Length: 415
Image 1 (tube, rainbow, N blue to C red):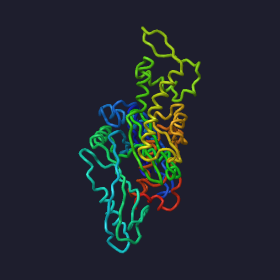
Image 2 (image 1 turned 90 degrees about the vertical axis):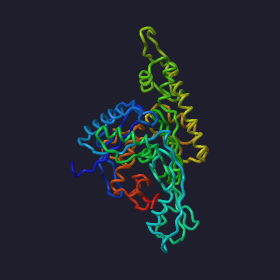
Image 3 (image 1 turned 60 degrees about the horizontal axis):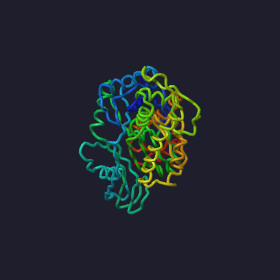
Image 4 (image 1 turned 135 degrees about the vertical axis):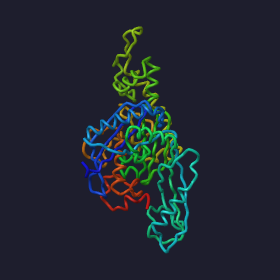
């Protein structure tokens, strides 16, 4: 076991914690593949809107999910790559300018200009999560992805900085450490999911990844191969469950079960005559409701969530016609029947559910659901980072199936 390089991804959601363990395989270092060895799932009620609210409960959940994954993989992992999301995440653009020191631009110049762009005040209680160069400008020439070797006197960079609330990150790390593991990296969840479910062509044309989780909905827009916009909305799957509680007079756990077994997000898909049994108290007696009513309640709330997402597209400048590759859905709520159909109606663009399949082998069928997009993306991130000895350029490059080509394709976002 000692000669195998293992990586682990951990997604701490508001209803479930999901762990995936993979082995580094493939054509290293050019085209690393994550061979899925183990998957673990555990209930979690200690996280709300991306923030750890109960460290003991979160620690228990992390330990349970990772133990299950380790049992399946037949190996133990010392550290994990964790996803982080929620309304406390913020993103902004920053520019940096330096004078070129020699006759042509050297890697040191690129390093300096990146450092200048990073050196901004993040505000109290915020830490930098990702710094992603969007483009370099050499003597007013824009749109350059790799300026090394070019001749010029002035080098600029436009950088996308993603920050998270420091206390949120610290509490997440603390929960994982208490479970007996080290946090190797924190990665923004929509970014992680993009590794597992978005193709290079989609990211080039213009695509939105919409991650509908338990307590928040993450939006990430990619265009010309780069991430262009990030947002987190506070409405998600838990609001659907709460609506069922109110509308059907059932408990939270019963509403969750009804949603899983009989739920649909698009009313036209449901047979109007189909009835479902409702859980009842002794006083209520036996009760039934039409499945159409259950679907109607879910449809209304999901429609509202998608309307908010659509407004986010408009605000980012990616409204009507600006997303040729459409929308890809991920997250635990995305598995509900009718999500794709409703999204197509609301956004009027191509829509598909994101099933992790890029750059993975092994127990692929164990992770074939939108809820595994984040943990699978996290192991792909960790695999890529490990294969390239932490070189920053590889972490936001193309998707694994096209990485057989020149290494420059991987490095296009950095230097």
